[in-house]
Image (cartoon, rainbow, N blue to C red):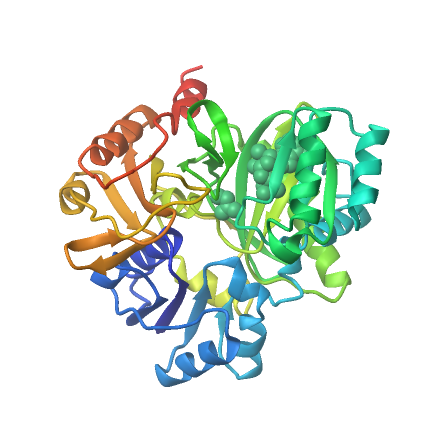
Length: 428
Ligand code: AMP
Ligand code: GLY
């Protein structure tokens, strides 16, 4: 089968790494890819957000299955266009991807179908949002979310009233996230621990991938602003088999049934961002795709091929159950450009990549990298995910950070505590 992976991040690098080893894959392409992916599979130029261009590329390369990595092309209707043109693509339609692209839609869907999530109000004007905050219905801290896509950065957990009001002004008046700020969701703060739960689904049946935990804040100790994710580990020790069963029954299946009932049948990867509270799992957010950096730690743990399930998710019937795993543990550390998630510089030469990738039990997945004059240079906020694997989290962490120590670029920033909480909870 000829397979095309769409996207340019470390998630897509991990997808290419995994699919590239599978016997069902005869030819693999990535578009547009990045400098690291290009060392392993042919990368083709593409504006992923133009559905007609994706269709033309799939036709030109006689692609049998296209796997869409990021949310933006899904929201732009790439899967709809591919399906209409008779091409098989793994991912939800534009209307089904609203589960991620509109937090207001996702919250309403959950409320209508009894899916546990934080209490909330959707506000369409700054006055309305400020009124909700001043009425104090949700207490403090309180969470403010821009309605549309904001690359994982459109959420503020405000500790006090001034911070909450400033967040509303930032999103709705100053339009920090553009039109994503035309509505905001104000919601109750849930305390607990977060875990990411993923399935591959045909809309009815679901095959469960290994779980993971992300580290969203920019700095050690979960300090600083939210980012797209600074590191992850897999699996999450929090998600026991019985909890996973509960997530399927109380969250995944009701959500899929709800989407189908509302005329938005869902296919592809479904990512449930969970808060495990004292009362059980609650949904913090849905994503219409795999996580980044979670994919980079989830896929190395699989003991079976992904391709047959992605093929079925794109058009057939997915075999229910749980993906077979190797039983090892993975920790992935994101190396970011200094200043990320705010302003950062690019074009910095990256050293030590080959030495890091050559270490045993280590994988280096590229995100914001490009071929430059002096070798591979930085070209984005999140630059690399360095993954260590091992029989336990302590070993996986050690391998990840030993490899990180060999890599360098001007302004390189990473968290030094990725996976610490996995080591702690596994040794309890
Ligand atoms: P989201 O983009 O919706 O996943 O939100 C980003 C991050 O904000 C989450 O990973 C949580 O750490 C935090 N967050 C979002 N909603 C809530 C909530 N209702 N209670 C507590 N923390 C939250
Ligand atoms: N790591 C969080 C996300 O992919 O949305």
